[in-house]
Length: 107
Image (cartoon, rainbow, N blue to C red; front, side, top):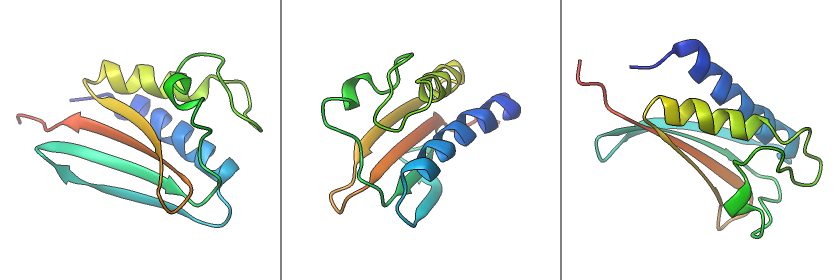
């Protein structure tokens, strides 16, 4: 169970980040993995600098061309309050991927 408006805000923050850094393409995937609801946002941009990955979801941490360093931190707070996890990686083929995963509802 989660607040749909807050989750929408978290997803829009992630999508805004992808739109700012994508070269031409953003892919949104959703499905079930190991009993969890997983949403992945992938882009075909340059990806995240490796040194930035461990700090990406902290407040005021922004990469090149970042805005204020709050969007992904806010997304993390929302996702974690809903019992979920958020993770960022680089794709082997290039570009970034942010994954949000949540426990499946018992209802």
